[in-house]
Image (cartoon, one colour):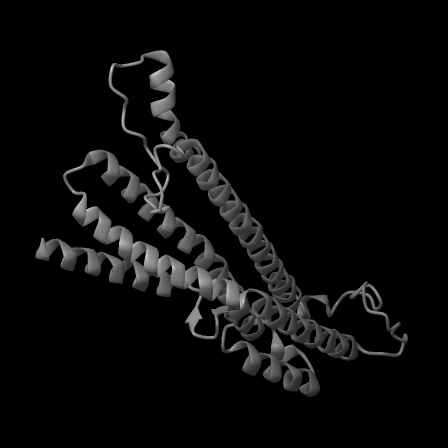
Length: 269
C-alpha cells in the first residue's frame, strides 16, 4: 500500500533530481475527471487523492479489526464451552465443590456427582445460549458493512479484470491493476476467514457433546444434552445483509467466478 502511494511522487522527485527540457507526464493515484486541468492543480489533486485513500483505509482497518476481534471472541467462547463439555464426566471421582469454581450456587454435601454434573450442564446450556445471542448481536453490527464490502469487492474486481484486459500491453498500468486485484482478493479472504472459523468452532460443540461419556450421567442430564446437540447441529454463521454467508466456500466460489469472468473477457479480445 505504501509503495502504491509513493508512485505519484516519482515524477516530482525525478524533476527535482534530474530535470529535463520537457516535463515528464504526471502520475495520478486515480484516473478521475475533475472537470478542470489536472496538471495545473496537480498537487491539490494529489493531496485530495491521498486524503481520500488514507481515510478509506483507516475506516476499513477499524471496522475489519473490530469484526475480526469480536468474531474471535465468539470462537473462544465456543472453545471454552466445548472443553468443559468434553471433560464433564471426567470429574465424577473428584471431590464435591471442586468441580465448578464459577458457579454461584454452593452444592450441599448430600448432593451426588450426578447432581453436580446436571447443574454444570445447565450452566453450559446457559453459556451456549448467551454465546448465540452475542453472535446475533455481532451480526447485527456488521451485516450492513459486510454487504457493502462484498458488493464493492465484486464491482471492483470485475472492473479491474476489464482494465487488465485493456492495458495488457502497458506494463506499468497492468502491474497497478493486478496489485489492486490481488488486494481485493486478500481483503475478501480477511472478511471470509473469521466467518469460517466461527462455523467450525460452533459445529465443534456438537462433536464434543456427542463424544462425551453421556452414558455415565443421569437421565435428566442426557435430556439437556439432547437439547444442546439439537441446537449445535447447525453451525452458526455470519452473513452480509442476510444474503451472503461469510465462509471460505463462498470465497472460493467468488474467486472461481472472477477467474471465469476474466477468461471470458480474454477470449473476446
